[in-house]
Length: 122
Image 1: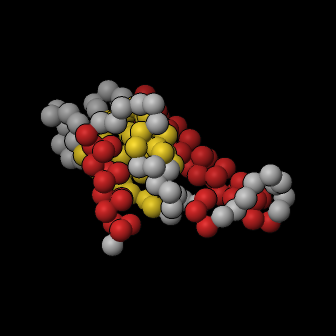
Image 2: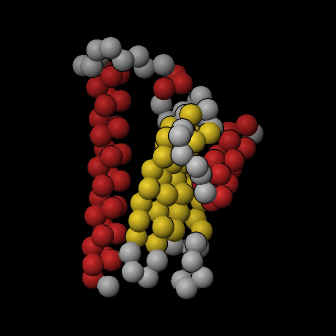
């Protein structure tokens, strides 16, 4: 039980650190401290979606989730966290033009992307 909580906390800290690095890089690009990058309107994360679900019948509640982060071209990343009684696993996949790049998507990941794309069209 303690190990599961510790792993969940470590995964959450990793996600927060990744968000910090992305924000720091964007700030450096916009201030001109990084050369060779272009900060176009399409280059930032503009579409965000979160889909919670229950992948296993043994747990109550929707403790697993899919996080979708896309730019204006529908490219970005998808982060999936699968939580069960014994552990939590976190996966990430690249998305290009609204489709997975070299990897298959689960039905929950496809649903999360469809939701984000549908909301962005409205």
